[in-house]
Length: 121
Image (spheres, rainbow, N blue to C red):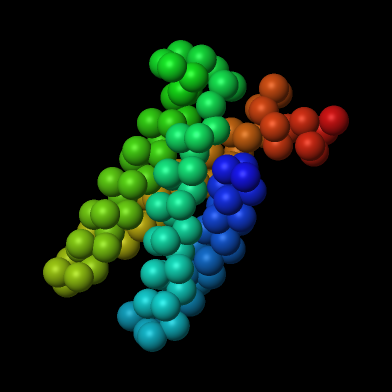
Protein backbone atom coordinates (compact mmCIF):
# COMPACT_ATOMS: atom_id res chain seq x y z
CA UNK A 1 0.00 0.00 0.00
CA UNK A 2 2.78 2.47 0.87
CA UNK A 3 4.48 1.86 -2.48
CA UNK A 4 1.22 2.55 -4.35
CA UNK A 5 0.65 5.81 -2.48
CA UNK A 6 4.28 6.80 -2.95
CA UNK A 7 4.40 6.06 -6.69
CA UNK A 8 1.02 7.66 -7.42
CA UNK A 9 1.99 10.86 -5.63
CA UNK A 10 5.45 10.82 -7.25
CA UNK A 11 3.99 10.51 -10.73
CA UNK A 12 1.64 13.42 -10.07
CA UNK A 13 4.51 15.44 -8.61
CA UNK A 14 6.54 14.88 -11.77
CA UNK A 15 3.64 15.74 -14.11
CA UNK A 16 2.34 18.73 -12.18
CA UNK A 17 5.85 19.99 -11.41
CA UNK A 18 6.82 19.80 -15.06
CA UNK A 19 3.73 21.75 -16.08
CA UNK A 20 4.44 24.36 -13.41
CA UNK A 21 7.86 25.02 -14.93
CA UNK A 22 6.39 25.89 -18.32
CA UNK A 23 3.11 27.68 -17.57
CA UNK A 24 2.35 31.26 -16.58
CA UNK A 25 3.12 32.07 -12.96
CA UNK A 26 0.77 33.78 -10.52
CA UNK A 27 -2.39 32.67 -12.30
CA UNK A 28 -5.28 30.88 -10.62
CA UNK A 29 -4.31 27.70 -12.49
CA UNK A 30 -0.71 28.01 -11.25
CA UNK A 31 -1.95 28.28 -7.68
CA UNK A 32 -4.36 25.33 -7.96
CA UNK A 33 -1.85 23.04 -9.64
CA UNK A 34 0.80 24.30 -7.23
CA UNK A 35 -1.24 23.28 -4.19
CA UNK A 36 -1.85 19.81 -5.65
CA UNK A 37 1.86 19.56 -6.45
CA UNK A 38 2.92 20.63 -2.95
CA UNK A 39 0.48 18.13 -1.45
CA UNK A 40 1.87 15.37 -3.66
CA UNK A 41 5.41 16.32 -2.66
CA UNK A 42 4.54 16.00 1.04
CA UNK A 43 2.88 12.64 0.41
CA UNK A 44 5.93 11.42 -1.53
CA UNK A 45 8.31 12.52 1.22
CA UNK A 46 6.30 11.12 4.12
CA UNK A 47 5.42 7.85 2.41
CA UNK A 48 9.11 7.24 1.71
CA UNK A 49 9.64 6.61 5.41
CA UNK A 50 7.59 3.41 5.08
CA UNK A 51 9.84 2.25 2.23
CA UNK A 52 13.02 0.95 3.81
CA UNK A 53 15.56 -1.77 3.33
CA UNK A 54 17.47 -0.85 0.15
CA UNK A 55 20.52 0.36 2.10
CA UNK A 56 20.31 -0.42 5.77
CA UNK A 57 22.55 2.40 6.94
CA UNK A 58 20.36 3.76 9.71
CA UNK A 59 17.49 1.53 10.93
CA UNK A 60 16.61 0.55 7.37
CA UNK A 61 16.91 4.07 6.00
CA UNK A 62 19.28 5.14 3.26
CA UNK A 63 20.73 8.47 2.12
CA UNK A 64 17.73 8.99 -0.16
CA UNK A 65 15.61 9.48 2.98
CA UNK A 66 17.64 12.62 3.69
CA UNK A 67 16.21 13.90 0.43
CA UNK A 68 12.72 13.31 1.84
CA UNK A 69 13.54 15.54 4.80
CA UNK A 70 14.92 18.15 2.40
CA UNK A 71 11.73 17.99 0.29
CA UNK A 72 9.64 18.72 3.39
CA UNK A 73 11.85 21.71 4.19
CA UNK A 74 11.64 22.96 0.58
CA UNK A 75 7.85 22.68 0.51
CA UNK A 76 7.52 24.50 3.83
CA UNK A 77 9.86 27.32 2.84
CA UNK A 78 8.30 27.60 -0.61
CA UNK A 79 4.75 27.88 0.70
CA UNK A 80 5.78 30.34 3.42
CA UNK A 81 7.71 32.42 0.90
CA UNK A 82 4.79 32.61 -1.52
CA UNK A 83 2.43 33.57 1.30
CA UNK A 84 4.74 36.36 2.45
CA UNK A 85 5.41 37.66 -1.05
CA UNK A 86 9.00 36.47 -1.43
CA UNK A 87 8.43 35.01 -4.89
CA UNK A 88 12.13 34.70 -5.69
CA UNK A 89 12.66 32.39 -2.68
CA UNK A 90 9.37 30.58 -3.39
CA UNK A 91 10.55 29.83 -6.92
CA UNK A 92 14.02 28.72 -5.80
CA UNK A 93 12.76 26.27 -3.18
CA UNK A 94 9.94 24.95 -5.38
CA UNK A 95 12.38 24.29 -8.23
CA UNK A 96 14.84 22.76 -5.75
CA UNK A 97 12.15 20.39 -4.48
CA UNK A 98 11.17 19.47 -8.04
CA UNK A 99 14.73 18.62 -9.02
CA UNK A 100 15.07 16.66 -5.78
CA UNK A 101 12.16 14.45 -6.79
CA UNK A 102 13.57 14.09 -10.30
CA UNK A 103 16.90 13.04 -8.77
CA UNK A 104 15.21 10.56 -6.47
CA UNK A 105 13.29 9.18 -9.43
CA UNK A 106 16.52 8.66 -11.32
CA UNK A 107 17.94 7.00 -8.22
CA UNK A 108 15.20 4.37 -8.43
CA UNK A 109 16.83 3.14 -11.61
CA UNK A 110 19.88 1.91 -9.66
CA UNK A 111 20.41 -1.86 -9.71
CA UNK A 112 18.71 -3.55 -6.77
CA UNK A 113 15.89 -0.99 -6.56
CA UNK A 114 12.28 -2.02 -7.17
CA UNK A 115 11.72 0.26 -10.16
CA UNK A 116 14.95 -1.01 -11.74
CA UNK A 117 13.66 -4.57 -11.35
CA UNK A 118 10.29 -3.66 -12.89
CA UNK A 119 11.87 -1.96 -15.90
CA UNK A 120 14.95 -4.09 -16.53
CA UNK A 121 13.85 -7.41 -15.02
